Image (cartoon, rainbow, N blue to C red; front, side, top):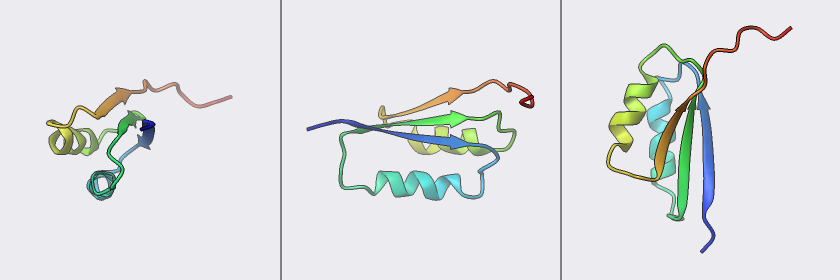
Length: 71
């Protein structure tokens, strides 16, 4: 089976991130990995992701450092 990657960028998404995770977990296709990309979020989004996915090795969080405003 072919593995797919799901990329989920987030920024201040604590109100919706749990629903996003639940939707991914309910998929019938199980051969995937999921990367959450933290776009310098300062709310509880990261903690929610960590709590909901701690036991599932398919999930990973990458922190994207703030790059400032584009020119």
